[in-house]
Amino acid sequence: MAGKTRVAKYQADRTNQKLYFCRLACQAAGDSSDKQLYQAHCETAIFHLYGTYLAFLQELGHFYGLNLSAPTMVDIKQALSARTQVSPEIQRLQLLQQQGFLANVERAYQRCLYAVQPEEIESESAAIVNKQPSARDLIVNVVTLSNQWLPDDATIREWRQQFLTLIEQLRAGMVEF
Image 1 (cartoon, helix red, strand yellow):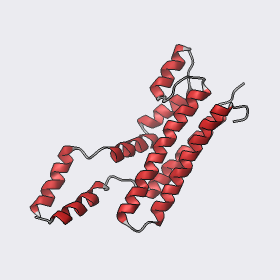
Image 2: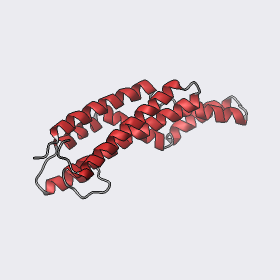
Image 3: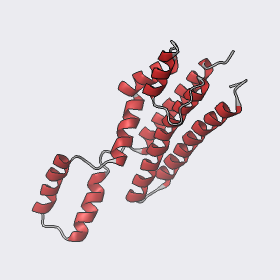
Image 4: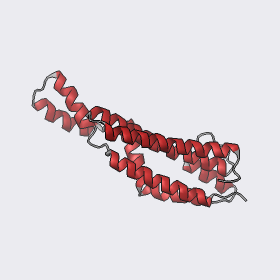
């Protein structure tokens, strides 16, 4: 990253910071014995990992000199195509977003944000209602059922390491002349 402007350096620092926060959340999840606390730490790690992706997009936007405050891959690709430029970094990210660890990170992030689809809830609710549980049991069951989709901390650590390796490779190719 030699020769980078101060703004581009800040963007790289932000990306690195999000990776660091993800690592801390994974450590906290691994140290947690409480199921709900473990879930909270894993979700936090996923949020920071997705934040890494967003921060890296912003880093790419600054690298290419684009004036985008919250860039997406589509925004960067369109702005570069208007200049008849192509970004090998964006091409690589798109492949991983379609099938690869980035697709898994994005899917986990979406599941952290949004409730399970109604048809899935109905089948789970029917099973719970048939047992005639108390109100307290319903709350416990909802918490227990809601995290079945959540990747474990080892999986999140693996995604983080893959993302770290990818970012290092892409940055090595991002050289200003």
